[in-house]
Amino acid sequence: MDPAKDQADELARRLAAGERGALARLISWAENKDPRFAAALAGFYPRVGRAWRLGITGPPGAGKSSLVSALIEKLRESGQTVGVLAIDPSSPYSGGALLGDRIRMEERTTDPGVYIRSMATRAGSGGLARAAVDAADVMDAFGFDTLLIETVGVGQTEYEIVGAADLVLVVLCPGAGDGIQAMKAGLLEVADVLVANKSDQPGNEQLVLDLEDALKLRSLSRRGQAKEVPVVPVSAHSGAGLDTLVQVIAAARSARGQGELTLLRQEKRLRQVRRIVRERLEDALFGPGGPGERAADLLGQSRTPYDVADQLLGALPRSGPATPTTP
Image 1 (cartoon, rainbow, N blue to C red):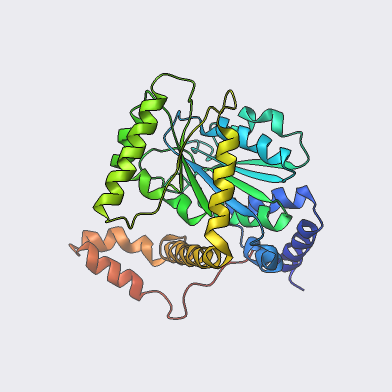
Image 2: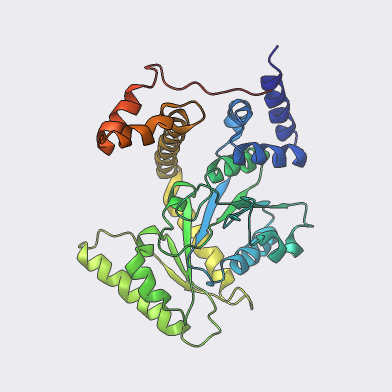
């Protein structure tokens, strides 16, 4: 008997049965790097891959959370169920989420067809929490039709969302220099759709023109090989342009096709494998009792960082680190 595996199997069964308690518990396991999550994932992984994953990113203040709330309403009007993963900055004291996007979307939480979960970035980078993909897998297996993944909005490092979403919306707004920032920060490379939010504010028309010009220049520099990225002006507050945005998202999804989507998702899973390997290697080296505890002493012997790294890696078992289990 393995109590940990039994608990994982039971939670996977409850998830398949549609129990929200199991949904919440599994996401917590993923966040806390509980080894039981991997065992549970094996039980529900065949159900993963049905949901459409939409990433929403962009600089702080662009109105990402307001747009997410508006998109929830539109998706629910069409009969879709929606899971939302809102990534927040980590508290330096508790490690928990600081902004609490669920508060900003409170009116949506009473809808049984909507599930909203805030998640702290913790050790994550690129505006995304380390466990975001795992959490999205749990929501996917639960049966939500569409997943909305909102990044923390750190501005210039929004690239991790590409590995978590099928389609990425980059949200920008006038009056914050977002057009220039998008060009400098490489957000145009991330975007499948550019959303010029706050279209009811002065400067939005200029923002749209700036973005369109930037896309033309990029296309010319790449001799027309750059992907086509639509620019959609919207107002999440008033609802203006939202129907058009939903249509653009649907068209992009249809244009991608199942074959292309399958290949893209496979590439993203390979990224996830690399991340897991890096995490486990880090734990094996610098976790309690790992050879990394000797790094400071080795450096004190005037060893170069490269020599120290080689020695630490050489100290690992050839079979690789074993995954710890807890009851």
